[in-house]
Image 1: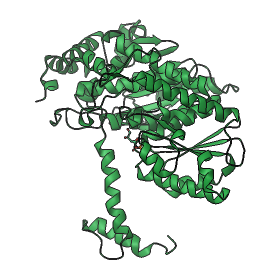
Image 2: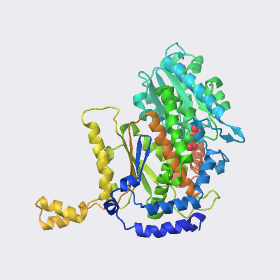
Image 3: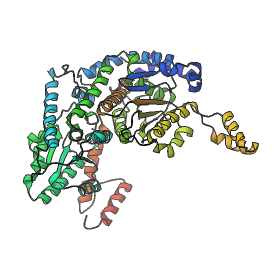
Image 4: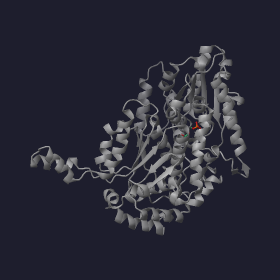
Length: 550
Ligand code: G6Q
């Protein structure tokens, strides 16, 4: 048994779960009229309402005991102090340094990283202002109107999600595009909308070795050179964001046009680094800095607030309570905010790449569940499809509901209707509908006793299905920064308690290696290397039937 499952706090939680398993939230709300206030937390103008969860004061006390036994405070301190918490790669995980607006020194190998962080931010600012102000011209002297980010995974999802989230703040006449998939459809259909003379490519890759990104970048470069008729054009139309200056040079991008970041920035935590450059080009420097400030405020809260008032700690502990004691293995992210439509995909990577691990830091198999499957879609669309399972399926799926008080596009009654759904769904999920209620409803509609008996089981809603409601004033850059940092730290809390490495990603690395072997098989004329018969059959069929033009 692991240290975690052997701990006294774990055993106490297991006993407490026996009691909580049968308690309905409906009753908890009825017994305590102040329940909403007791389990809600205001951070700036964001209300985190955690009251519709299967928790009591005692649950939280027991979870805090577990956090103390696991020395969560020390783990938080180690991250902020730049200790090598990414143990398998011997690196710190210092995304908090990227938005450290206080400039508190943060040391890596006894050297303060803040001067280099600030130097890159300052170069990003200058470049952003040049491009947006029209001082940076394309090869033929025209102003840039379109920015294409070429990157994948952590070098795509963050800026793509944030560019959509902050769409209303993107400069008029500036268009952001994101190409990630090596499927040529992604690049070809994006380029079809663009004029090379006014397009700037940002090649974003931490390693600058990722095959998908480099393949897309080379094809984009060929397109540009062919259209503008000169290799010289590359200098005015390509910049790079990377940790690998040598590879950037080898691609043909001048080092002066490279924006650096560092190996202590994880891909999925890199939005705050130069990976955010396309976003900054769209929304401008003030908004980009506001996003950093919003995240920094949440960082300071996480770093300094006692555990029992610490919002990401509370959310992380509640998630652990569900994953390990109730056995809920899925988590839905349901933004009632169209601008956050890419948030589920972004958080899917953040959670599942960080905490999708099966061994502890010491390399032992875990004897408890780790990361749930994370998924979701913008509300209200989901209500007309998968919410059926959330309400009445056999699984219980904790869900986060997010919405803004102020719409970015006030129009008629749209926002009131949207928010009515945002309030009604968590209420229904919590409350459910009993057999008595169903029978009474059907009786008022004049149904026969037989019809009522037949229909009742189908129309019962068990309720007791947990949700967090996160209600913010308006989705501006600062709020977005705060929300994203909240999620990063919540994921950290879970990983720290599970004693896993939340900052490596060997499963992703595997994908990068596997395809290269098969690529050689596809390219070769003769026999392919040994594979199982299924894989061999698929490769052979592709080779035999692919059009000769490919
Ligand atoms: C993120 C992952 C992964 C990574 C991509 C792109 O944490 O490591 O999603 O961001 O594989 O890698 P490069 O930025 O090196 O191209």
